[in-house]
Amino acid sequence: MSKKYKIILDEKQLKTLLKSTEAFSRICTGQIEYAISEGWCEKIFKLPIQVKDSLRDNFKAIANILSDGQFNGHNASYGIYNEEIDKHAATAYNINQVIRHHIWKENGSTEGPVSFTRDSSVCITNGETLIEIENIPE
Image 1 (cartoon, rainbow, N blue to C red):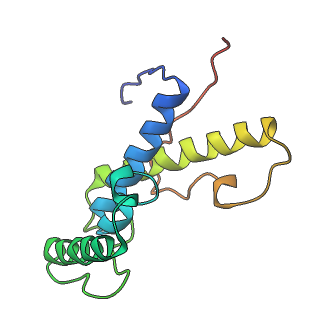
Image 2 (cartoon, helix red, strand yellow):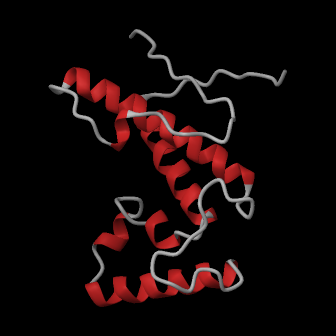
């Protein structure tokens, strides 16, 4: 049996962990341009479109180099559970999915009716034990 740990985070820290695990798992699968998009790096959103396009092309080229030429197509990447992917990436992905689902459940109960989205289910895993999240009363 492996050791277990308890980490206490506030809401901001939990959301930072959510973004961090998303970025790490995407980088490891070759989705570098997605790893820094979607609010991860605010500076990128303020750049002119030509600069963003250039960055995207550079990220795709880096992913292609890191994958030994496997990612030369548009949106090509390894799946998260592919044997070529670092096992830490799959763990980060699993952590991300549980956090994302937990935040979805919290927002649904406080901000109106819950809708069914990709956030509504916990991930399909590689058999790894998932983290548990428990709210701590204030």
